[in-house]
Structure formats: structure tokens, C-alpha cells
Length: 336
Image (cartoon, rainbow, N blue to C red; front, side, top):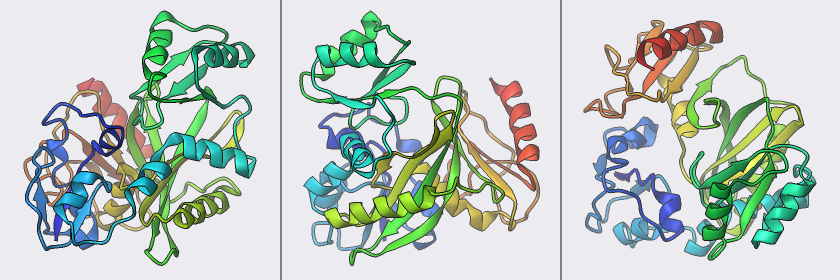
């Protein structure tokens, strides 16, 4: 087996590119999956040569198809459609679970109207943006010049997704595997951890955290809808619960994700322990890689997934969430 951690997957779908070398530090990350232990890992910044071995990728893109032309893949247009935030936006409205005031923006007049009618802060998203990249945010009733300029530039080629901003909130992700026959496996869920600016910082695996009632049912229905489109492979669904109640569908990630990798780290943790995969603002190098010894502490990723110690992220392991948070606070104070 070969692996390609093409974390610039959405950028490729959008016809854009990122700086070479940006994701090289994650070259071996797919080895966290049991089926990829010991696999050959291609450098994500190099095209590589087509091969006959099975290829496991972060997301299915044209580059992936060129590297494994004989392998069966979902159709390119289907992969692009289900990863597009406009698809999940439309699905939210069809299921009757959309945030009041959320809408598609086709021009600047649409944006001005949406902001005028929104009674809270807001966010405007690119259909293929990742985390806090490719978006603009604004205060209630206001549009800054920078947000207006960003929107004007994007609207030349894209319609955008407008949503009210909800705080406080607890973000989480649900993970599934859609098989080629359309059946769906439930892989589990984890909490998403962000900083005050909404930038993703990590994933918390907490056995004591239960999903809000109805969340999993919506997740399974969304997975079935995605499967009905003709997609198969890994699927993540971001969601949250907060001041507005449960929002069981924020966006769909028809690819692998750091949340899925966090679930894979369970094999290194004692049963019922908490585990946090943390991406600090400044790189931190722990003393040793995570192994299956079951001792509370702060670790590097397992050697299999980060043999050169380049990721700059850590895994925090402890019996309870409170103990994990205590360790994280100490780490944050020391490094940030």
C-alpha cells in the first residue's frame, strides 16, 4: 500500500494551490490507520509515479487518480459536490435544521441584505474553505472594508455561504465510512477544540462525552444522502451544540480528517481514558512518542505517524478530561 496525505485537497478541488512544503510534516499521518501501518508514504509536494499498489489518500483528487489510475474511485464531480459547503447548506434546509438567517450569497447586495437582517455577528464562508481559512467575519449590522473586499473578490467565481455566528458552543465531529455498496459504518465521534478566534486547535476524545439527542440520527441520514450521490470512502460531519441548541450539520468533509486520525489514536490509549490531539500556536516537542504504556502525560505522535518529529503537535493522555485540561494549560503557559 501507498499513502498520500494531500491535505491541500480542498484547494485542489477549487483549482488553487498552496505553498510547496506546507503539508510535508504530515507525510506519514495516514499510518495512524490500522490498514496503513508500515505503508509507503509519498511526499505530498511531489507528483510521484503511477503505481499498481493500492493508494490511500487524504481526499480523492485528480492527482490521486493519476497516481492510481487502475484503482476504483468515486466520480470527480461527486467528490467536488459533496465537499462543497453549498451542498451541506442545501441539505440543512431540506432537512429543516438550518440556522435561521443562513443563506447563499451571489452578489454584494445579497450580502448587505443578509447582514441587515441578521440580529447577531456573522460569518461568510468560501464553499471549499478549510477551518478558519477562506472566510470573512463581521459584527452585527456591520461589514468591514476588508470583509467587503474579500467577498467582492470571491464572488467573481463563487457563491458564498452566509451564517449567523453562534457563541458559546461546543463543536464536535461525527465520523463514518461509506462502503462502495452504499452501506454506512459508524466510526465514532470526538470534540473539536478551537481558540477564541474560532481557529481549529485540536480534537478531544472523551469517553464521557455523549452526543446531544438526535445528532447521530442526523449524521447517519446525511451519510446516507452522501452515499446516494455516489460517494464512498471516509466521511466526517462537523456539528455543534450551543446557545441556539443543536446544529447537527455544519459542514461535510468527504475525506479523511484530523478527527478521524484522533479516533485512530484510541489504540494507544487505555480504555475509557481521555486523549487530546493538540496543535499549539507555537510548535512544541514532547519528550517521547506516544506508546501503549498507558501513562498520563504529554507525548509526540507515535513514531509510525511522525518519525522525524516534524508535526509540532502533541498528544495529551490522562484518565479524565479535567486532568487532560490541566496538562494542556501547563503546556500552553509554557509554550505560548
